[in-house]
Length: 275
Ligand SMILES: Nc1ncnc2c1ncn2[C@@H]1O[C@H](COP(=O)(O)OP(=O)(O)OP(=O)(O)O)[C@@H](O)[C@H]1O
Ligand SMILES: [Mg+2]
Image (cartoon, rainbow, N blue to C red; front, side, top):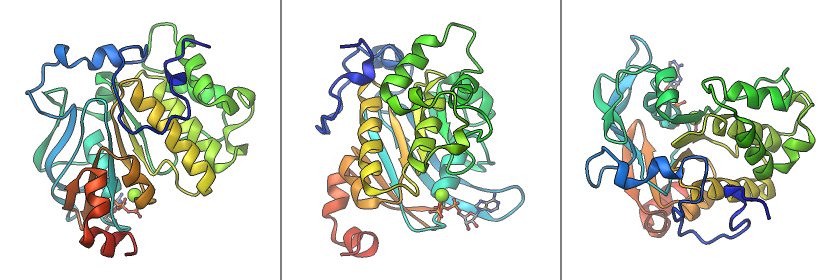
């Protein structure tokens, strides 16, 4: 048995994600006792964000998304609802005219994406999330670009989480299957040892079996103490693993609750889950 924090409870689908403090990646940093944040404030929050791209119209209208310590938060909603835009706003890729983004209680609204990475944000965008001509291992090394310390332990942990990546470490990432590429993208983000992980449609274009597998791995990451903020088009499955869930429609919060609550909500079922 390795001491890899990701290996704990492999395959265990118990949704009660706990911080066991054993994670070497970030659990200690997420210790609420060390938090400078407001009591009850989520670890990461994009709070009442209004904004759009460049000088274009607002896409987000008072939109709020957040990830609590030790939890998985899921964002669902129709195509074009602004899910990716909300994620980009939280990551500092577009202007937020109103509202704020706070990480562990600190206002980071005006920081660049790079500065947010240094603060502990890991982001896997919906598209172009790997370097296809580089090998798997080079992708992971690129992920560690902000680190000055020895990142080999983290790479070992990523390889333990995604064993196929170790097997294919010298292959060009572009030659991998869709599900494997997504593993590279998530692994790359983990290389910075993020305090919070943001994933935009990590299961896009993969088979249901691969989707389940990826969800299990994401749950494992959450168990190490890294909160997850994730956009998903597989709404039903995503709500099943969500501690907190947001339905966005036209740049606004349409429904918010626990995954269970939204799965049981008649209106959500009818409008977004096919009855
Ligand atoms: N780079 C951009 N410049 C201008 N407008 C954009 C840009 N990206 C997205 N938009 C617009 O913002 C709105 C929301 O798009 P967004 O990509 O955030 O939706 P989404 O909920 O992520 O959709 P999907 O489920 O298809 O990924 C759309 O009207 C889209 O045309
Ligand atoms: Mg999107």
